[in-house]
Structure formats: C-alpha cells, structure tokens
Image (tube, rainbow, N blue to C red):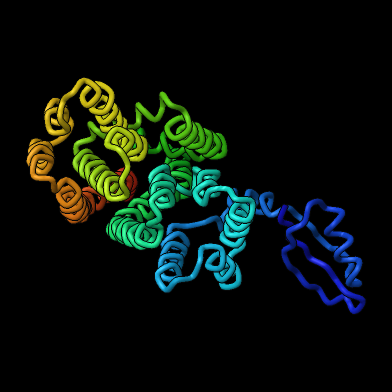
Length: 401
C-alpha cells in the first residue's frame, strides 16, 4: 500500500514523500527511525479521490501530456515501470502523481496496466481504457499512446475553437441579464414609486412595466432563491437522471439553431472513436458497443447498439446494417459500405472524423453569427421598452406644466 506523508524534524523543517509499505504502523515506524515527527499520513488512493472530486483533477491537458510522455519514453526503449517512475518525479500536480503512484502499485503487484485507468471512469472514458487494454494485450502501447495523444489534442483543439466562438455571445447574454436585473431590481421600482406618488395615471404599457418592476423589487430575494433552486434542479435532472438526459437529448435534437451542431458533433465523435478502436484491433461488435457508450447522443447510441445486436449478430454486413439506420446521413452509410468492401474502413472513418470536426467549427461560427444580432436586438427591445415606459409618463408630467 502506498502512503503519502508530511513529517517534521527536530528543527521543525517539513519534508514529504511516498512510502510503499504494508500498513500505517510501518510508516510511523519508518518516520520514527529517522527522527521525524508525522504531520499527515494518507493512503495514496484516498488522496487521489480527494483531489479529483474538487477543482484540480486530471484535465484533458494532463492526459495529453501523460500519453505523449509515455509514448516518447517507450519509443526510446524505457520500460513501463521506469517510465512511470520518471513521470512521478517530473509531475507536480497531486492528482496526476496520485494516479501514477496507483499505476506503479498495480504494476508492482502484477496487475494489468489499464486497471488503474478503469477505476476512474469519470476521468478516463471507456474508449481510453479499451484502447490501452487492447494495446497492452498486443504489445503496442507506444503507438497507442502516441495516437491517444494526437486524438486528445484534436479533441482539446475542437473544444477550444467552440469555446472561443461562444465567448462573445455569452458575454452579451450575461451583460443583457445584468442590465435587466439592475433596471428591474433597483432603478425601475424607484422610478415607478415616484410616478405613482405624484398621482399621474400612466398608459397601460407603462403601468404593466412598473408593476413588473415593483413586483421584482419587492420579491427580489424570493425570486433569486427560486431561480437558483430551479437551476440546481435542472442541472441534476438533465445531467444526472436518465429520464432527464433523454429529454435533454431530445430537446437538443429538435432545437432549430442547435440540432445541426449536435448532430455533427455526434457523427464526429462516432467516427473518431470507431477508427481508434479498429486500429487498436478490437472486434467489430465490441467496437460498436464502446462507441455507442461514448458517442454522447442517445439517438446515435441506440442506433449503434441496434447495428451491433440486431444487424451484425443476424449476419448482415456492416454496410447493410448501417444503411438500415436513418439517423446516419446517407453519405456516411454509403462510405462505410464502400470502404468495408474495399478494406479501408479505418481510413474512411478517420477522414469522416476530420471532415466533421471542420464542419462543426464552421457550423458553430455560423450559429454565433446568427445569435449575436438576435441577442443585441433582444437586449435593445427590452431596454428600449423599459425606457419608453419611463419616458411617456415623464412627457405627460412635463406637459402639465
């Protein structure tokens, strides 16, 4: 069992380290024999769980560097256990070091290399685990690590492009909400009270706006708590509950401006995952099952499982099984059928991955180009409506004088 300790000497100088012993008592005996006073002693696995449950867990950038370094070291002839020891010395991030210690402990006990990754399904996908498992069985870990590093790099790049494209609309949306919140919570109730106290009878439109402002101003705390509770319920329901996830998937598939991006992302993920698994040598049925679990869309997941369980198991070819599924575009099913006959399925799937990654980037930019004027127009109408509701009573008041 691996333990991480913090200890102080007679001069209160603190040191830390990791010790592979059988029990906590052996750690204490080890520290006592060196004149050290224990400050903190924790099992490595406990440290991993604690670190990954908060900010500072293993990110996609960490996984890119981890796979890249392992691939490089295996290429120059370093054995796996020595490569892990080198990474432990070089990595400073506690979550990554904890994982590496767990891997080293598994290897020292003769356990398979992929087992440590499989214990953290929230961090390492089923595709990641199965690729390493297949590579370990075939003795092709070095190439698999390099391919994993490349595919994770492409995934991070695509996420970055989407995130960059969405920054401006998000800033616009937040600014709009902040302006409306300020007007309805602070400015509008005070202005409405001034007009109502003067006895002026404003038009119906102004009375409605003033009424909304007074209601929000008088119940701001209750409204804020209610909105936060609804947001928390929505996050739990749509992302943690199976029924909610299916409903959210259906909403995305039928939202006019989002469904194309959602569909192209699912196809890109399908092509990238399936091509990687086939290159690693996994059987077709297992490849389809793993791809179904990682594709991210309920509609595509059900379709891929149907291809595996009802198509291939009944003797259909892969192309025939795909052509029965309407969720996939015809160009995709036709390319799969042709490439299966020609024996170039992996290359075609890789080309589809690249094509749809570029298409997602282009579609997101087009979506943002549509959203920006809509958000600006909506913010202008809202603020303009509030301004008109205030200006009309002011005009009435000035005409009385």
